Length: 432
Image 1 (tube, rainbow, N blue to C red):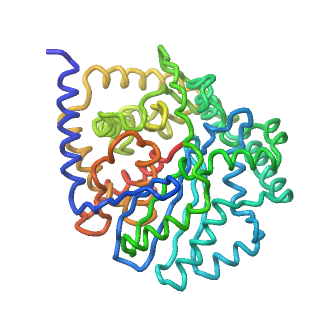
Image 2 (cartoon, rainbow, N blue to C red):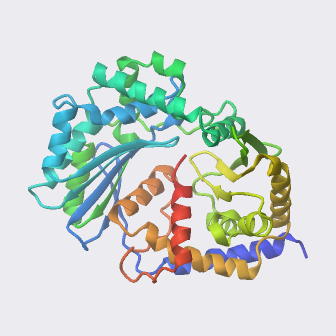
Image 3 (tube, rainbow, N blue to C red):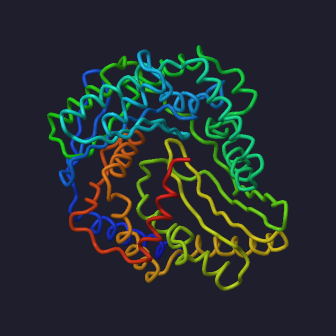
């Protein structure tokens, strides 16, 4: 019998168990398209009189082009004033309604999110404010200079961090000339060349309805959700969706990055491009990584390299599916004089896992841990809206995956291990 067959059987069984475990108390996901072409996902959550909404654009650092860092600058500047309100007046308008509004960006996406009470005396006002933030940013010169300085400072701080240096070297080595290769913060040279005109051009190209997805979760009905979505993105031109990213070049072998710490510590990363969003065997791969290094204290790598041999301070693995092939990474921190020995053991474990896969007991234990911990990742409207955004933005050509489990209704009591797994998985799933 092929050595690969037990692996596939075990992981297919794991995928089936995951599907059964997460199907309980699943909320209905409604979807539609606004008149100007934005895609909307909506989940009604009547438990509390709040609504969370997130407008996501395919406008992350992968769209920087010849201006590395511009996507992050645009995202950071959205809250710095609109055509009618300066930064202070904007903050006061949000505070007056008792709402929360924030922006962010990563390699694959940029977003604006809001949380508000659902009363008619609050929600329409804050929706209008967010609509102005999304569609009509002013990019004042003074704020552009401030945000540029912030990113330059962040670059300087990263240059003093061995972990950050190792991460940037890994992404550069994995992705070469691909848009994923560069740091989303940009570089000092590129940031100095970015002015208001370039910022406006980037916003005008990528912050358009056809390139937007809206996720809404909260205590409102379908009719109000439709009005909210129309308000949030109604001021955007239809525009065009961003083109597909180029494929990631295939690597013949893993990339290993060693970054020594100024004292006696070393950061070691091993990685290669792995899978895109929508990968058919993602549930099985997720379980496999949980067994290998994604399950924290329960993982093989932790047991073999830290617990049994004491060779590392920390060790983990993660798979980050992205619009193009996201990375599989094993990371560890160790004493500099133990780095090669630790790396040798890690490679032995990787080879053994690739050859034999997880045991049936490991798979069963991992599935129980994941299913028990997953509701902790979707126990708020904001977390659910974040998941909805990723579903639609990064799976535009696919149907939606299985419904999400409702966070509070009918969820199993989480164990301490499940809580640890939830924290580990939450940090691993964040888009780089």
